Length: 219
Length: 219
Image (cartoon, rainbow over all chains, first blue to last red; front, side, top):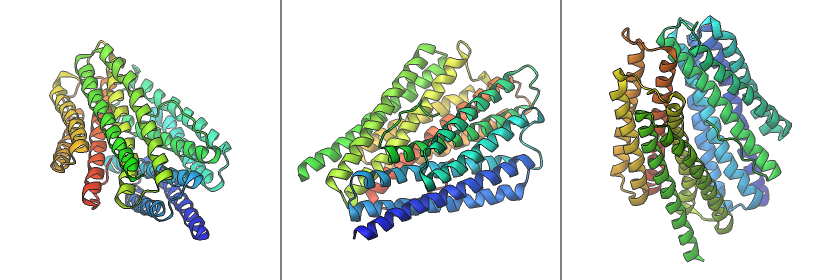
């Protein structure tokens, strides 16, 4: 019985990693679509998000079955409840990658981001890809150094997000309103994506150390 | 033992209602702050959000203790897992009310929303208040008619959210970029708030009927 249970817990862990890998892929493709105004790639991300949602549901159902059938306690219980929460964050990261792709598709063949702040968005995109990759690696290895790196990347995302609003408020911002809307939303999507990455990292850290780190409230 | 357990489940339900009431109050005050550029009221909402976060954490801890100590199965288990998810949605609604209040405070003494689309935002604000009140009532009564009403209100929120982007893209939109940013973010906050209300309503419906209704993906 115990052996079956351990196999089931392991399976949950594997599924989280699989979802995290799909999220990683989604944000990479969403960025390429977004930067290169590639509508086919955008379409791929949008379609792939349904798979992430499906996997999240099936992971959640399995986790609830384990709770019902095995009545786990202590660290096993925390791990399963943690998995339910992490799957919700990962699913949301998938949604946000889809939103980035949808912006690209909506404005096709134009680029969403004006030249003057493209470097900022390139960095945001890169940071989110980095965060997604590190979340996957953290789930695989439980190496908590990665959690610190994710926090650092998120801090930089927040700086860039603030700098976007500064750029938009500056006198030399001469973009039309729809572009301003797109820039605002895209920046918000990148910022939220990173926040959810931090949220997963905090849960892994908690599972490993048993200590909850209340952080500044997420946006 | 069974009696203690039922009392604990009841307590979880009561706490969800309490959080939902605080969220209701938060969105009402956030709207008043937002519409009247009232910075003190905005400050109240921002401060009160910490209380919502605290209650969510304590509800979650209690729910996990029940899982560990009682090993509930079947509908009791679903109720507790559902409570964990609903508390996450309610906490997020509190965050979004805080964001609305923060926009009001940031722009004080100016109003965030230009006259030309103030009616749209008044309706968005009213719908979110209505959704929050109905979520509380649904948690109290489990009357599923309320769930349908919440869905209908959310559909209207989505329409208004889309109409905001249409207004911003129209030729006669003559607001500056920071105002365009504020309008975009405010509309997005109202729309997300409503989505989370729908999410809570779906979970209550599921707990009552045992049937999950996969809906269109939330944004």
